[in-house]
Length: 314
Image (tube, rainbow, N blue to C red):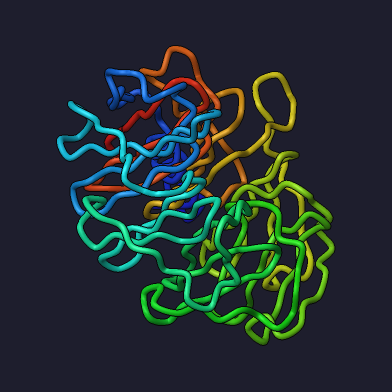
């Protein structure tokens, strides 16, 4: 066979494969919660075994959980302080609150304080946010980034202080720590002893993601890429059907696919590391704003802004 024909056939097969991977016609989204979870503004979702935790980030900021895949829900009312974030690390569930960190070893049945090393005082009302990146447990309290190497028994603060004001804004690449602050994006190569400001002057980065050796930032003015651990950034050409740059509120990776949740437009999928995106919304009528994403048992879960929790088989 002529070499040109072989090359043409290979190109066509690749295009068909890519189209199939991005096709949104197989399966669709299913609603997880059939009852309202507060205002249904689900800012954080996390799995601990077969227990799904969901934080309604309305004025009440109520934490809910289900053990039967959403058939029934119960409010977690035994955390003594108002919950502002939830994270799962090893076999523990962590609740960041307005009065420090609380930890549960029994999927939310009981909670104990985990504030040793944090400057939390009696009656404190500052938000303490718990995050996990690259299998490292972090907390953010009063503008300082803390780490714990013993499941929250003790915390150690970084010696370099930053004005860390966002909740879901940290990435440990294995070599660098990258954080979004109220004054832009900073990175450190010495575990936070010192920080450098990157060229990405974004005040609202919602999530960082590592894809291969590329760092991807989902932000309020689009998606950005860094190939040097956050020192420099390149903006993507990601636009919605109205040719506008969407507010990217969440992002997650499964296999070689990237999934981005946007404020108005639901979920987008990319099979080429973000070079191009297509809608991934079959089954969602309202295309709600997506605030958080999680993976469990072959499903992608999304927490939305006013429409609760949805899941889709991948």
